[in-house]
Amino acid sequence: MTHIIACIDGSTYSQSVAELGAWTAKSLNAPLTLLHVLDKSEQETTSELSGNIGLGSREYLLQELMELDEKRAKVALQHGKALLNDLQEQLHSSGLHDVTKLQKHGRLLETLLDLEAETRVLVVGKSGDLHKNDTLAIGSQLESVVRSIKAHILVATGQFVQPTSYLLAFDGSEVSQKLVEKALKTPLLAGMACHLIMVEDANDKAQAFNQAAATLRESGIEVTQATLQGDVHRAILDYQQQHQLGMIVMGAYGHSKLRQFFLGSNTTRLLAESHVPMLLIR
Image (cartoon, rainbow, N blue to C red; front, side, top):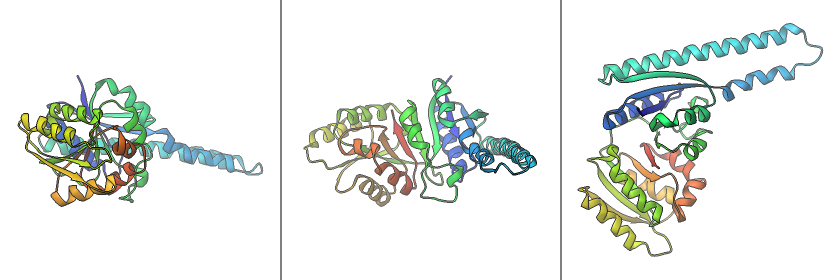
């Protein structure tokens, strides 16, 4: 059975990741797994300090450093377990009972790849514990996760509010036309109003844009069309905020401006400034 995997780490986004994961699990009638990864890459920084001790230093200093590393690892383990327990209890209290906890040692991406076969949707925060006090920071591993994981990915960017509408970004390419078809098949979006937007390209994409809207309407979806101007990330954010849309939906990869968007710095800017979840569809 496939699960909704929600990655939590003690950052400011752990609560919203858990709530977003719970909403996803209820919407898809799927079990939820709260995942906490004790990432080696974050623990290795302190261990490297031992190499800076001079030859004349006493041996007990090295021993103290080793003991500190061991204590840090134990505290991180205990903190992760407590966090998992607290979030599971909260979700049980809210009526979601099919929630399991999973704690792993290793690197985040490698762990997620190991779990990929049983992952239906991956829910992550836009940044981790290292940037918990910086609301505009993007996690260093997020891009690697987005590029590598084949499941749909939901990115929590702020306090969770259940969405009733979404912005669907379209660029007229064959890839984005397939995105529309996949959006139709995604139960997460069922019953929501759709704002289909296109950031205007040099080439004429009006026919493909209108066809995409027609496809959505034929399936009974309430659709609003809008053609925007300017930078991709700014146009999308301004429109989302103006219409108070609850989610931004995009393909993980595209072409033209949207291809540049997902391969360049615009991804970081959108994730950094968005206050609503982003659904990246595969």
